[in-house]
View 1 (cartoon, one colour):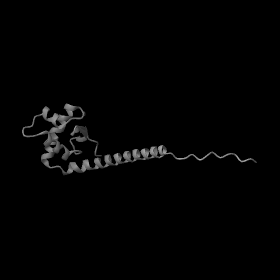
View 2 (cartoon, rainbow, N blue to C red):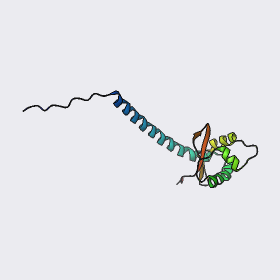
View 3 (cartoon, helix red, strand yellow):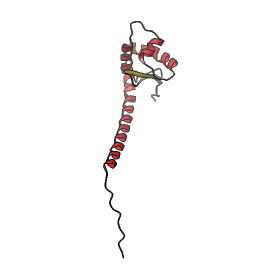
View 4 (cartoon, helix red, strand yellow):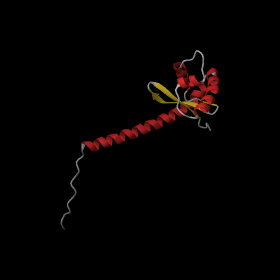
Length: 132
């Protein structure tokens, strides 16, 4: 019986390796993002429990107003101050406050840090997930 010719082994090219590395990086990035989201959820409930009474009161007043004004859209701390002037409060100090309380759920709402735009932090007020 004649032997059938086996296919020639295909050499691995540098492009093949690069594509595999990119795919692995993307999978790793997706896993890191998922883990980060899970940790943020847990930190959010822990963070709310550790807030001072003053922070809770400030958030209880601020979050509904911003949520109503922005309807879940991203905003800058400076935009909040232009909507609701706070004497003696700068965008930087408000940003520090928001950073300290980010993730905490108060009365069904929470503040979330979305990212940066021109060295300024973007924020969003969202409906907090149920704690059940």
